[in-house]
Image (cartoon, rainbow, N blue to C red; front, side):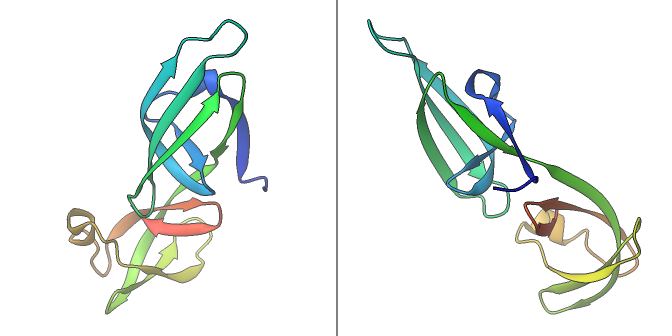
Length: 130
């Protein structure tokens, strides 16, 4: 992949941590493990929820494996304008302006108003209002 992810040991994965499942950044919601057999390693089943799409994803792995964890940049921006489901924002650190999609979550969307400060995440090259 790229420098936007870092490998971590499977034993370091905890509920609430972010990992990549099927190429998608996910937050870990549940972890179950089975005891090692006579000649094997423990098996882990990790349930995650997509950071941007909210879809449930599951991966099963051997206990000696590694997974990738995405690097998440949380940044501040100011809303410049709203047009339909597009929000034009300005990054408060770099002053770069760009468009983002209006969040699907109604609780987050109602906080997005012209002139207001918001937080957006950049994960694996994808930017989204959180």
